[in-house]
Every structure is written in structure tokens, then in C-alpha cells.
Length: 175
Image (cartoon, rainbow, N blue to C red):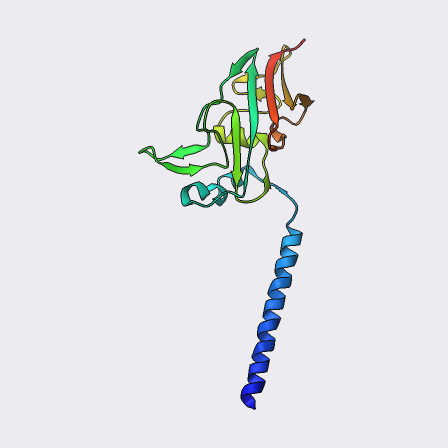
């Protein structure tokens, strides 16, 4: 009879723990549904080590980036975001990267996080703000315009990256 009571108590404790775990999980998943704005430091974290460890990225999309300086297209090089060791082996792949020089930018992460256009330039180690693109700065004769799908925006480096958008950055003389 003691074994029956102990068994019932153990079952009750076990079921209680499972219930608490399930409720905690549901609460946690609901609380963390919002996308979060991420800091630049976050980009070089574990979210893109999947490429080295065979883990599939959960979020993978592309956008097109075109940079025009004084009516001349500036090439975005291949393999931006690839870090290689001294023997040329890949040691890290940033979640925002290129494979070719077409301007097609890949965003691949293991969590749904908001990425900004400025993050790509940070990874590329090139300047981009409302006052500077690459080595070109605004002045009384030159401006920088950013268009997303043809629409002028004023967000510059804070432009949120989204799947399948076309982003045009133009540095040119004022009219």
C-alpha cells in the first residue's frame, strides 16, 4: 500500500512538472513573437555558424542592392561576409553576404531578426550614412538618395531589409 501512495505521489509530481514546463514554453513562445531590432555586434554571433556546422538556416531571403556614383554603377564584390583563415578556408560566414558581384544580397539567419542595410555595409567594411556612401560625401553640390522599390526613403543605413526588395543608393549632383 505504501508503494501505491508513493507511486501516485511520484505520478502527480511528474505530471505537475510536465504541465509547468508546457505552460512556461507556451508563455515564452508567445512573449517572444515580436521581431527584434538587432545590434551590429549580434551579426557576428552564433546565428550564422550554421554554414560551418551544417545547420540549416531558418530564415533565408534575398534583396537586390544597386549603388550608383555619379551615374556609374559601383560593383558590390563577391564573397562579402566570408571570413577566411590564412590558408583560405572559410572560418565564418556573416548572415548578410554575397556570392557574386550581381548586387544580390543574401540574408540567412537561424532566428527571425530584423536586419538593417547599415549592417551589410558594416560587414563589407564600407561607409554608408545619410552623408556618406563608400568614399563619397554629401556637400552643397552632391546628395545621396535611397530608393526602395523605386520609392524614395529617408532611412539610409536604418533601412529595414526585407525579402525581394530592390534598394537603389544614388550619389549624384543636386539638381
